[in-house]
Image 1 (cartoon, rainbow, N blue to C red):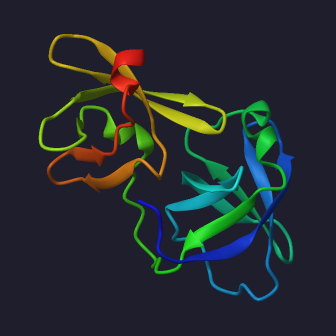
Image 2: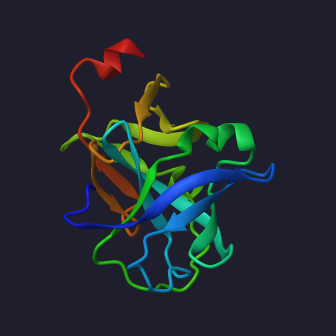
Length: 172
């Protein structure tokens, strides 16, 4: 699910308040309205990691305030200070669908042709989401929800096709 082209929106300059919002200083050349965006990518340790947006709001000339789904305290977003905020280059305004990362619960995880199991929970660690997948025999497997591992998310079929690193299912 790595975007082919991204646009640098700006950088996270600080944490705002106690509920987990951040202030983003926009790039000077960025003039588009981003209120319709559903997700962005944060550049963390050289990798672009996807984050769903809970809300955005103006925060002064050249700044916006942004809150990510599942991050509800200042401590959870503190490490994002200084991170670049990127948008997929082909994003378009979408109506608020009310979707969140938690909507993936119940989706089937497929590493290929054989289903691995169903997502029973989303574990939200700072900087990394984990899918808690339960296979048919009841075994729980924790899989990093990272853009490099995601091949496709099909909302109609309720499936997440992923590349599962060798040995990951045995570690859990």
